[in-house]
Image (cartoon, rainbow, N blue to C red; front, side, top):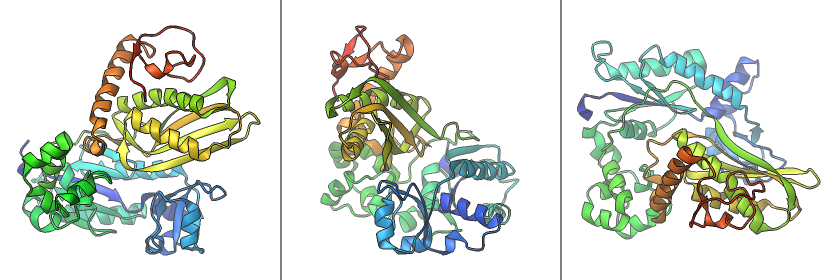
Length: 419
């Protein structure tokens, strides 16, 4: 479809979890607005492994960042107010937002719990002034639901999402193709979807420091160095995106997990890593099948004394690669394991979003494209012939079930891919 004829909105709730928590508490009679004090929504503060899920502007002023441990956030701001997350409440708030948006267009894609794309293509006879429409929606959300949103407007999803990330909160921004040069090109190249931490220094070595630098660079050189990832981010820098707004008015899943109680105590790291890999095999397959990526990876451990503990990390970019998620789980395990025998283990991924803008984000490591192809082949084979029809070589003589972590004595066809 010609981008010039499309009108796409991206609606992003400002500091979603914190805003929803604050609005709910005010409705229940609380006098203090969490948005007006240094505050965060986060996990257990008793454990140094709880992380910041959302922060107020005043907390941000203390250089507190989403995803950092609560322990360090408290060090930055001793008077910080920490409230626990209530995901059922946040899902209800998200549902309320979507129900309100249905009054304007039937074509709504729920990109994540706090983001939506709306398609207003060929609706100019109903909404002749799209800027007024966006402001009307923004003000109605604030008046009726009690929280604020940013709205980005453009002719494709990428530019609409970029626009909604401009000055916050409670703003409407446009980023049409004619505005790319003035509004997007001066931005740091790391602000582009998806220029990750590994790609950034490589771009800087080419004297690419802004999105405009990338957009105007020789594509042949970019393609030679970064392969398909380079072509993707070069197109993004030039505002090229042809993905459609896929009608989806509800969040299908909030998290995906797998766990196992073992018939023996695990006492060594190597076996624990293999069990984690077997659990991630299933989690990764389900994640890709749902057409989602994750931004939060968690592990759960219970020792032989029935003492439970967990560890999690927020990712800098969304992910659905089995190999990457497994490596993250290994890291979490190595950081958290107390060297006590383990009787059960679990893996969970959450903060899910669909994979529209994911393709580029995984390619900071050149091997990830190959690994993702392997994932897809394994998914197809397992879908057709069963979960145990193909396994990684690391499970060949381990005695472990390749997708559950349990004991298994059968012989399976083996794919010689060892993590």
